[in-house]
Length: 359
Image 1 (tube, rainbow, N blue to C red):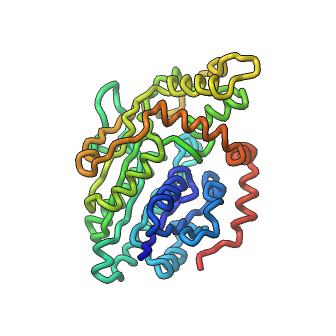
Image 2 (cartoon, rainbow, N blue to C red):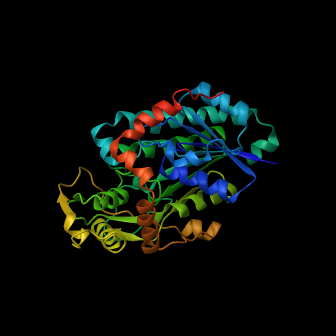
Image 3 (cartoon, one colour):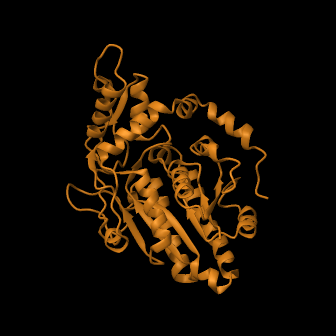
């Protein structure tokens, strides 16, 4: 019997990778993708799935109760996986309104609609239902040179983005503790891999390097992040949905703590090998140091002991192997990222998806 996952924000980076992961590995699942198609929601990331029997795209907002009610009634999903979020720190500093609207109000409305659906399910279906909320390690704030975030680390967000995600996490827990909605939360470290929007650090450096443009590095490039290849994130989210304990939070980390400058230099070295410049100069010559952004957290690190102990999780890729795969992917998929760099994708999705509504 086919079961249904409702994935919100499935045209984004992690969401699109998750949908591919599930459909490629579990023939007993169909996916309904609800996405508002904001600037980073790129339908081209899943274009090859359109028209297949196990994938359904609906353009809509997680805050639209009418759309959600229609989806519950039509597809009767066994689980909701909430990726829908505004997720860029710099954009949250220059314009926080969208972050408050989507990450806080949108999550609240999705929770409330899911609760109404859950309450109407027969007991057997209630027992299997899950609401999985995908969050970030940025809710914990900044670390010094030592230590790592655990599931019990107090929240201390620094930016409007991380504050809005922290608020959404608290709402999810409240809907479990107050109303009994069966929820799960994962807080992950920095993801990278195919289909990531070009404004993020790793794809930005790859594509700027290919075009021989400056590679801007904040401050001295000393800020440290824990990098996680996106396929590992997708695998563990799916495992948590199936095996995680209701009401629990699980941290997912890549065990790859690397300063930003070292990340950029590694990308440069890979480009020197895989796509050398015509003049044979190193791509490192393109690195440019720029003024640090406000509230830039110094270091993130995830302690993934709990998820390893309870669910047997281990990342499959080292940072070096994952980054090599990522650079190769962008070299081989110009047709995906070139429209994003030009802005042409905005016109594409307006024309292709204007008439799509829940039905």
